[in-house]
Image (cartoon, rainbow, N blue to C red; front, side, top):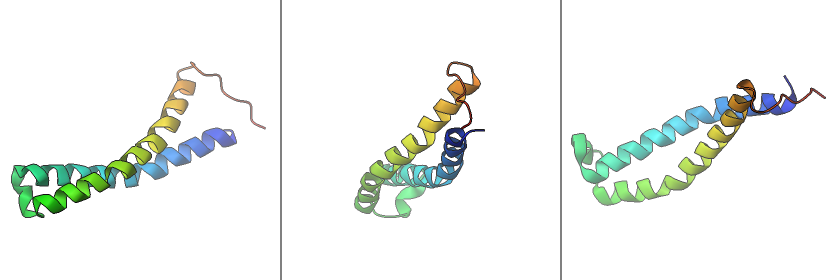
Length: 87
């Protein structure tokens, strides 16, 4: 396995846990804003809206850091991209 593939694999693995936490926070604050499932008890709607808006940036960054290397590795695995020679 060459250095690029190893880096991509590590990025996919290490970004998955923070992405999961941010996604859970995004969903919880979204439901707290609307008051569904009793999550309005979690925090006030205004606070939930502020937190929800603050999570847009980290969610997009983590999504890109997680998905782009995963797609690259998948395209290699499927044979759409040739494997690079180890240097």
